[in-house]
Length: 145
Length: 146
Image (cartoon, rainbow over all chains, first blue to last red):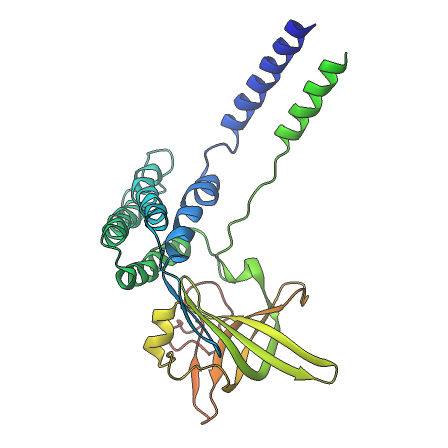
């Protein structure tokens, strides 16, 4: 009975993997939702200020573990530029690839900022990262009217 | 038989995992047909990327509610003249913007801010350019309609 269950498990998982590869397994949406977005959020959430009547809270990491998370996110951003530029994903070889490569530069700068524990620079880089996101979305995603 | 049923239940749950939605565009979260004016006291300002958030306490007949207003990037706000020195807790401001889809205020009301009017009467664009927000004239950088 156990062997039969195991066989059934393997067959059904194989079927699921096959169908997911054919459809949405690695499309741009998934790359954004599961790879780029979480990495970008790590960078954005690690620099800035929250101001209330009680005072000001600096969001920069307070320990090495926090900075390491930023470094991880930064590397994911920079290496994702190559995933975006793969031939079956690149919409064109000009602007699409140029914007993807802009992510690589920003990711590397964020990595250096994290190495230097420079939250001020990380804050500026976070804004530039968003500008690249918007520039790409304007051209390839957001449709107005 | 019980083992097979358990395996099938596990596979069913695995196959129908939730899909995460990435939210960037205006229309993903806000309703262009639900404009709103919010007048109240600033209680909290979050200077974070990719959007600054201004928390505004509004008093109505039934009590106080907090509106969380999404703005542009902190750098954009600073370039427009909205700074940590001008947008301070306690200041009474008027925000013109759009409500979140559904208009629910649970647990807090959420809006996308287009411009903010300060106590001295100055009005400044506080939104993001190029995110698909309505071309309502608030953004001085938005392209003119043809």
